[in-house]
Length: 322
Image (cartoon, rainbow, N blue to C red; front, side, top):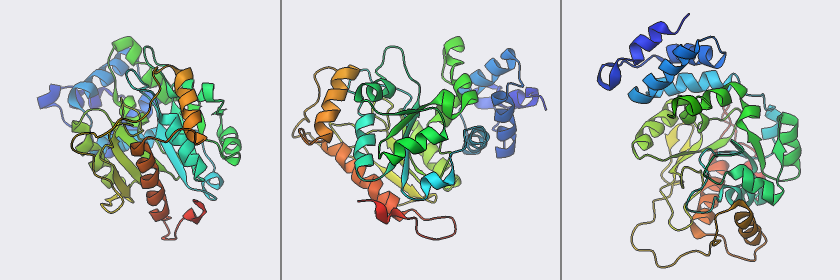
């Protein structure tokens, strides 16, 4: 089925556009990801959704279609230890990019961590660059992910290797100059049983993504990202909302730090990848303290992992978390 009828629904402007059903959104995204649309249709889809904004049902359909095209991460990789997915698609401009620090601190606790995103982002310091300077592993397939986890190391995988068609859709931004639905979908990926950290930049997305996590019965931490990264601001803890099987769990969540800051954490003077990597190494080795908000995020994620349950109602083997 051509996507013309879908574009007619979503392309009538912010006020006149109608949202698609979950099934329609799945079909639309399947055609887009499979390259069964023309460049003109692809541009129309990207711009129409940018103007209209995604509904919960549309996001669910888009994500389901994307998951079907991700590499298959074997269930055995998640059977012996808890797993966390960290989407890294923004990088740093003002603060050091500490997503790799979060990943390493979780790995020290016995958590399997997979970070996914682009290698580079013009004008920003990407997590991939920090991973490179830390000597942490990059994976191109499921076997390489397993090898990194077996060494108790966090692993980075490029979007091009995790889901090639999604990476191509993300690249449409270079042509049209605007983000599209792929950028939201990328931050929701969880192609195997895992607790995902879902972060947003614009406050209006907090409500939409919260409803999405409920609708899809997700296991996730929802938070406002640090410059769009899934790590707590090292200066002030953001609100951390934990969802288990789609239910918000207040007892596992953390309120945002309010009021005047009484102190500032010791951070690297420069945000370049090399300086950030040296700082992270000092924290992981115990030479320097971890910023309190990031340490609290790690504790919050560990508690959420312990609470997660298998679909059959059996408790996951989270007792292996230190």
